[in-house]
Length: 295
Image (cartoon, rainbow, N blue to C red):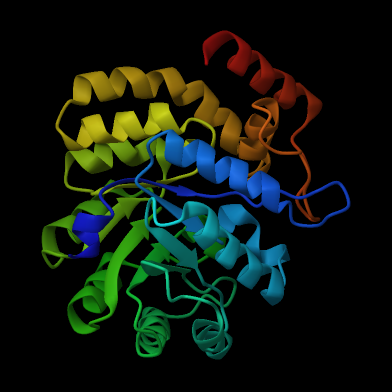
């Protein structure tokens, strides 16, 4: 079964809750995992950038991966995030991290270095040659500083056997449509932008890897399933009801916004590792009001 078949619908990029002393809060991770799976998401992503991975050490990452496998217990597929800007170090991680139970690896493109498109191609080709797990590209130029062009994505999709899909978070509809037009039939293309997911699905995207599904898993996974079935009037109606919440999620910082929601829902403590800090008191009050009045 191809990833395009296996990962249709909504994946959720899980947060990493922390205790007040800064330790990883595994009990809270478990609560969030149960909450999103019970809410109907089709798969989960551990150690995505929403999980504050730049502030986790390698042992913590391995512990979180293993805990996620145990808690999910094969109820849904698990994708593991392994990305960064040092190719050789990522290859070491691909060999040392526990990936046996992973369905795929999600790998954000190199940040800060701003490699050429050839550099990006060679980076992913090197990663793909070092792991039996399928690799999903993650294009998020707003964070990495460099776009993976449609031409590079398609070159990887057609020329590198282990490149199985992309989480596309560029806001260029033209670029997204080029990828859909020319992708291999089994190449998974999912949205990396909750706000744009419906129009992207309308011309061929296979779903979304979502932030908002951490806090609204039932509502958002239903929206995405309706869109994939072509029920866009119903999906659009329900999506518009969440637009205010989506704004709150990202207006100051992700994952500060989603953690603020999860805190108000009683699932986690509202703690971070610097340089990330909680949202402002004014935004926290708006989030609290939204949950009370509109959830």
